[in-house]
Image (cartoon, rainbow over all chains, first blue to last red; front, side, top):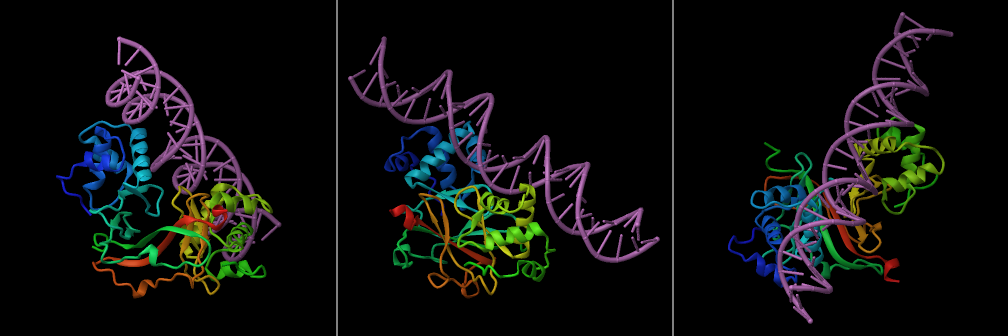
Length: 144
Length: 144
DNA sequence: TTCTGAGTTGCAACTCAGTTGCATATATAT
DNA sequence: ATATATATGCAACTGAGTTGCAACTCAGAA
């Protein structure tokens, strides 16, 4: 799920029609260089290591990224959303796992579980754009 | 998904080792007599029609029900959880649909989409207890 | 009957994650 | 250089749920 450290985040921003700014680059980098989706407070902390950022700015950047499809907003079953990379050539669609003991959210390798929305036939007149699959259980760490 | 109006909710509470009280019965009835999972504020409003209830009490009853497996807490992709009936002989496991336009959450008929956790093989040493499948798109109403 | 004591409910104040309004700063266009 | 748009920051706010504690209820003991 990790994006290469040598990836040019400014390019990625431009490709997704987002004006590249230092803060946006820092936020994108913090999300991309992770193996799991992060809560806003975690992204905040990650960005703060190098640059100072206001939480309002962070939330606005996250909203913008979600809007452009660059980032996906995920619910972990608690009150804080997690933010993970959207689908690109580097990041394909995948399900997630949440540990009900420690609350951590992990990405499942796309091979482990995949569902193609286009191939699903859900009766009724609804338009289906997306499926979110979230497994719940106990993670490797919490099992001891 | 609806439970019969003649269902004895007090019996259901007892069967699930929950002390039956008027408020608990009212909350359970409000959830059970719906075709879709409700947000706490909606349950509040539904209960208020007949009885007065404090929001703290409501949340405590919901926590208790979720704890006993009587009710399921679901994330709709926004900040308010939805509460729907848990699995019983009346209510089998099913996926949900959320309209990204109006925010409503609907239950999908179990036949339309079903996944058996026990039959899934997710590699790794995690223990998987549950899967939540949430479809996103535009509901029949919002399509006009 | 009155007295417990566990379980249930209510009220006020709080937390936490995210938002709004508005002022300031920075970048881009003329 | 000036005007306009876009980005960021700060303070105060919101909404959903929680905590601490007091008051009520009701079954069983004295």
